[in-house]
Image 1 (cartoon, rainbow, N blue to C red):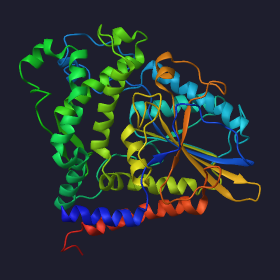
Image 2: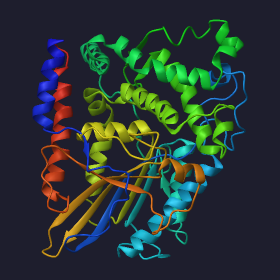
Image 3: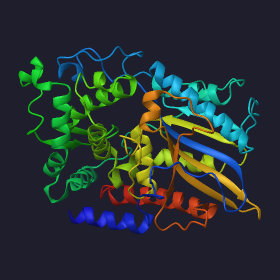
Image 4: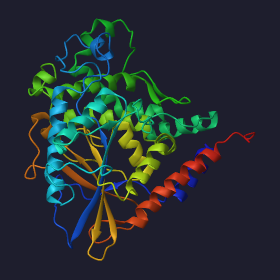
Length: 440
């Protein structure tokens, strides 16, 4: 544990930051400015939209309920029809917003190099980037870069560990355990027990023959843990992971099925109940990618790519599409302070959420940045309503501890790039700290 304390101290000194939203009271963010700014660039890192569960026949969700899930309109792990529709609508909203801001005229065809779309090589990511591009630029033939394409695009958003030693793995596991307080993983089990019980009752898990067989153990008493291996994505093990796989399908079904009672297999759940299920997913997400030394490791290539993109003076709009862990890991690595998003049962990275960087220029010619999360609230997802300038998505600004903002909540260009540089340096320090003693 002394090593854990030491590396945390190093990271705090290097990063000088933590996680926080501006006041989040559930109201729409106001678009008015105290003084004029001109929007010059937008860079977005997005989570994919609604998908089918990650596995189908023989999957954990199917095994652990006597009920039948809805008929998904996409194959296992792929974007559903509703997900495509809602992402097209989001792109259409941005088409109107970017035109109103004077950055990209509606129905225009950008010049070469002015826009960039990139996605992980997963159907749900590539398809979503296409849907957004069609909504935003309906007359342009937009190419979505992805690993394996003719460009030789690298998978810089792959959520995998880039360096690994036994000492690093031990300290990363200790950081995850610390999320449960002094009780460690048992504390995390205690924190999630009520939500797991709610999930079990909602899907009538006790009536599942496979659950009764003991194949999946006892989700209310079994332990959970953490697995981190070289070149792989970290994972949670045990009861919390099993429960989260069921919760994932349950939340997706809630988003897709207009009848909330049917979505809960005939049970009547309150908004607080659905929020509790969403909180379990958030805990699972934070356990996987929310530890600082894990986030720094995994997001290093992406952080470098984002900084490069933000410094591209020709680029007007960039869109990167990956996963919830990608957005959370990037926020963690950059040091955003703890936040809870309003009007969402997923309070950290709602389905389709976008981490957005805006470069604005003031009347004196100085560049400023606004960093925010843009997302549909839960009702907007469930209703599938069209997004317009009169019915916009939620938008809440992020702030960074140790990074000064002006009176309009904007960060200077020097301060933003200084933050990126410190995060990159923190990764280098982390790698050096854990380098084997006999390394050349």
